[in-house]
Image (cartoon, rainbow, N blue to C red; front, side):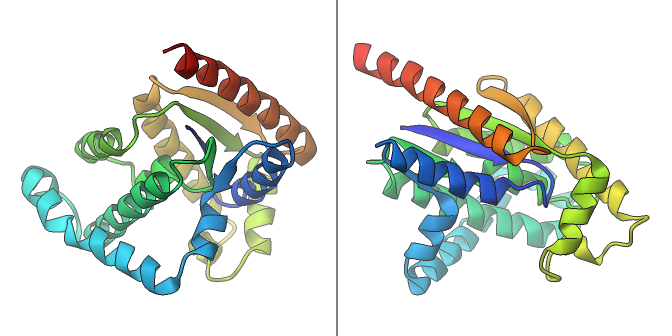
Length: 231
């Protein structure tokens, strides 16, 4: 199995690209699944149980990183709880998809980490804790696409999104600053992923981005599949 994650600021087109590529991979005979389709297919009651299990491990996490928790604000603690729930959800997705050749995340480990501290720079202690946790659940080849758009186009796409989106509430003056902070946090997290293959992907031309990502995914799959067979 290989794991693909599309990360980037809100509105760049991660989910659309992820679902489109999943369909195309399935169309050429590869057994692939994306997180969003999986979430839509599982029973809601099961999804709630997964989330509850995530919240239950918070106390164990807090005991493991006491100095980190003391420095964490109340709002960040709530986001930390949500992040831990997402980690359990991610782990469940990986385990339940073990028969798939390729699994794709429109929002995965990287994106979740950057959501712990929305408006501020992620601290090193938090990064260290998050990185140690991701290493516990991921032991398979990991390909990351760092998706980006120019700021004006990114803002326009956010304005077209659902009003419930967290970034929708910001004014046109505040929004560029928030997007920049999100991008900085993503870049900071990506520095921890030097053991993975990371590809910068400009999303201004969706069709080109899709074709380029498809070629890279198939190449990455073929290389890692051959290695696993040889071993």
